[in-house]
Image 1 (cartoon, helix red, strand yellow):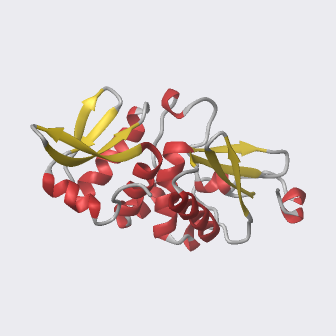
Image 2: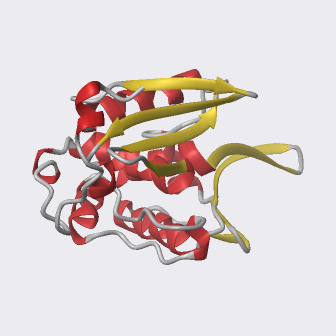
Length: 207
């Protein structure tokens, strides 16, 4: 539930790129939360505040906890709650400046509109690409074992209907030096052994 202070303030936006919170962001936690937001996050507007929500599978307890911790680190003055419904865990937080920190917010589903990183977001993502990839994979990706002639080969998949979000995933992989390619219209695959081993160092199987 929103704090009393949050209810008293208008759901305002700072001028583009000028929010005072931007310069104080913990880059690693923000990059992770950005990946989660691009995958399974949304913003809900209320008359006097905003609510950031990230939806995930409640069986991945450690991922739910990581999203909660990231929200607390990015917006330490706001409480974070977790709602459980039909196997889904919704991690949420109220705050007047969530829309400043996620300017990708807009009407309709993400795949129906342009999704671009603001210059300051790209700067953070360039500094912390592994955390961005970790958030993206934890939201819309997985690590699987592909069996070929009786031998199992691990690989990563990332699926999203937005061409722009898949493009952000490809870009972050390039920054880290990871090879990926489309394996169908909406899905990307990381299958080269070196690239999988590299992703295993900072992502690994979901738990």
